[in-house]
Length: 291
Image (cartoon, rainbow, N blue to C red; front, side):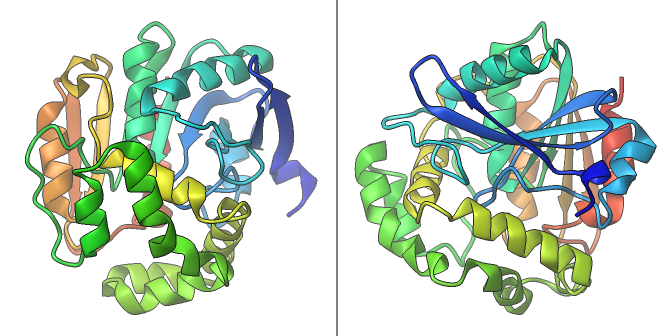
């Protein structure tokens, strides 16, 4: 990756002594978008085949590693609602006041938590292939393994312990995860991941995300299957939801539930497309979040 197009990496020591790692993509003087990465993923997550596009669009994409992912220290006992404090520390250090938030998949809870906690700073929210909190009955996807269903009924520490061995195999060869996904995903996603630039990008962010093992991923999933700790219906900023109707990872029914919970939501349903539709629609997505 050439230095002009990122990632530009940094690390920040937080008030409790933890290290928060982050990466920036695009124009350092552009309008800021906070990226809440998927699960598993990392600060290396981006949504374009060629990161030079961010500079052309005037976007400054800032993606921190959540605790335990990539190079960020774990945060024992963390909650979804703890994330906005880390975001404030980072963006204050970077001199960013107002910003948009964009999430992919498992990052949705964290993006919406930022919007709820920081109503004067978050202008808009984007959710790509996200699911709702379990405060309402979920239309559970049929492929969901039994331990994941069981985790929804356990306290977070117990759920994390239950899920850790489920995800441990991913730490052996995380770079192969995109190829594994190509077997499990719908034809649209297989086509997207079949592009060499996308496959390389996903392999890099998955590998980095699992750097510290499966604990962070298990904790993340345990938190997402428990109430998130804030009422999603109180998010007042404009929220855009983008979801493929053939998403086999997060079925579109989950996206429809989330969209119905948000009072100021613009929902975009893409017929026949899947979980990684952003790689074909990134310009539209970032344009919707522009100031």
